Image (cartoon, rainbow, N blue to C red; front, side, top):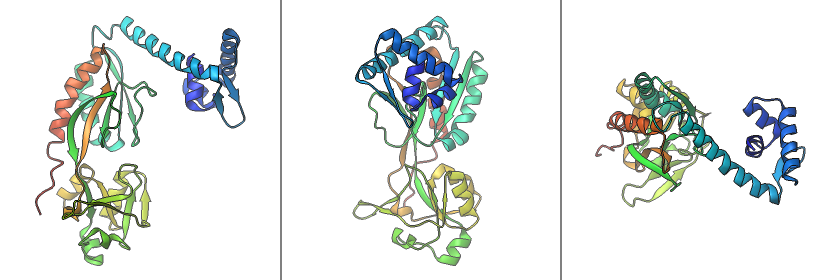
Length: 300
């Protein structure tokens, strides 16, 4: 069942075999044996992808539910519902992990020697069920109502530039001034395109220009901005150190959108492993303390 589910989720036998760390031939043989056992075809195979048959669709849904129940029973048997032990899987955006979460994890592990942590760092929201994760740190509006959430703070979305760049190209007075202005864009689903809010009408609008430099991480965007390559738009905690050191300046403050909320989320379960409860109780107040200085737009 696990091999079938993994094959469907990964899209191919080869990808599933890599994830499960087994030979492709072993996985293929086991899926074939499963189809023989149930007496029907569960998958249709092509050179490009796998597709579930009608019978396979129903079987796949049941198999996932069974595997989740087995996983929970194994954790019960291992004592995770009686004592804080076992593996804890946490998913978080890359920079949030580096700047805010990892120091908390270090302290937590020191306090709970029987807990292991697997940290998944991704700037795209990772599905808790599909990734078998226990806890996630989410930056942005929450869409999945099935998750339990604890708000830990908020972060402004700021445009910053070096003094050298502002002296050379002028200080933008409105977001429209960014058209044709040297810009460094962090390619993020939550920050692209650049969004602003009109201070008088509260109307939201976007500015999309061809960037001078396009990067895939906020720290690269900040470093490029410090070097004077262009202005950039990032979350305020990404540039906090550079601003305090006088390397970057915030511009267009009055056009900022509402600060983005930050939550710790986890699955709503009737019985929660103690390791999850301990981490939530440990991490929520510490993250709130760490993020307390952010999220407030100073008066203009």
